[in-house]
Length: 279
Image 1 (tube, rainbow, N blue to C red):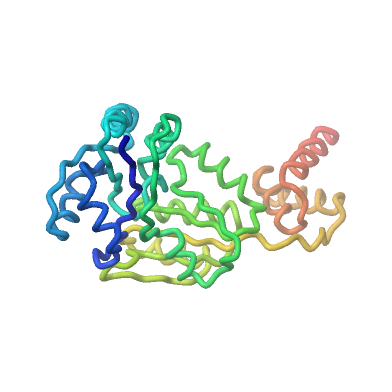
Image 2: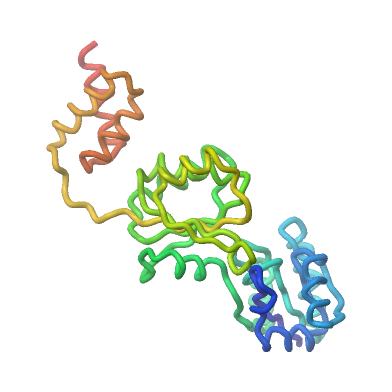
């Protein structure tokens, strides 16, 4: 029976590939690659020639069956992605699961990962953090995801592409309020940059400046609650005043929740109930 190796590849700088990773890539029988063109460049850099099979998010189920068949027949395989560790916001999870179910040994050759790199560069709290990956392009799913994180106290890590960066920053600001953020761009590459700022300042900047490169966003977690500064009745009064001032009920409840410490949903229900009673 063969073995599956999870091989971490550089996230930008080819010099970050470990000697062990190079050795495993040389010794395995074949390599499963997210994009064979990208992996071919890495192999050329190493002076290696290896059979490559495609293993990406659109064919992973079919590929897993073919790969496990070869592993059961005694071949060794390394799975690599375009950058970083397989299975982390990249293909590989289904293949690893299939191998475990079939009793095929799975070994790791750890390599660079943008998550830990960005958290270390951020200067924000590193003792506990949560990786949230890419936000959904579906509006409702994004809102639901971010709403579930509003009270998250751990540092949060997101991946984002340049063409969606501004929208994501605006959504983060809307969901979390104005928090500290580190924007880590083009990690380990020539134009690597880490900017520590606030969500509001980042939104203002990227409304005027087109972002370039891939981003890792490291966002400060929620501060521990200090206890409501207002009674619930006073918070409802604030909510009503905001609504009377022209804010839609949902927005009034959200702002009152931020200022009072009470839950937005409770304030929203109370506001609607008060409006019904006054009719």
